[in-house]
Image (tube, one colour):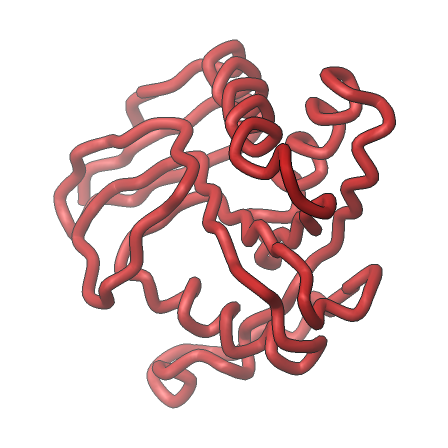
Length: 169
């Protein structure tokens, strides 16, 4: 496994994403951060903490969404039900920032978008990811990216507060 992004790089990227979120959403109501279970939840919380350090009265709330039952490959892989959704407000009319650890094919994001509809109809959804590794199967593009990492489709990418690691398979 090769480290491509250190723990310090993760912190810097999260802080930069937080600044970009504030800049992009400066003239509207506070957005709602929603982490995709399970990899995106700790990143959403870390972004929220960075936002609070930058501007303590930002009004931004943080939650989590489980997209497992909305996946289009539900019959092809096991469904993990260990996680649950925790949405702090009705999302109708809100700006939602969907947060995930790795953007790969786009299928998890598509499922998360569908799952969000159970909690209201957001005015808009922005996507923040720590790692964009390419290989998209759906037309999904992130608004905020920590790092673009070129990978092979078979590589395994692991993201944590300790860094980003790629293992060739």
